[in-house]
Amino acid sequence: MENKYPDQKHTDMNKLRKGLKYMVFCLLLIVLGPYLITLSFINDTALFILIPGLVAAAGAIFMGFKGIRTIMSAVFDGVPAQHEHTEQ
Image (tube, rainbow, N blue to C red):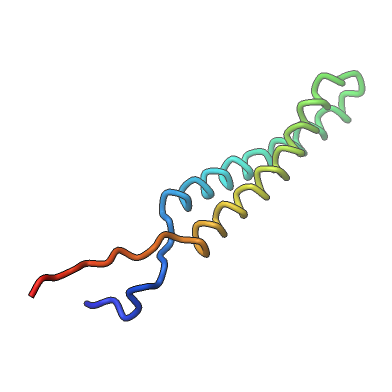
């Protein structure tokens, strides 16, 4: 099947995989952050649990933005289409 639009850019798959890895790590931090914060409030003397919980929550926000930005860059910036030259 011939490409209708030979000058159209395609999704950069390596960058897309990288963005999806960021999102998986973000999902882990989304669960871990509130869990640690709640655990530290249940145990009133556990300040050493609160600080990693806050860092995990901030990291989840950061990784979420970075993942979405990387995925959008992979889809919309893309890579140029390969031109196949056939000799006649």
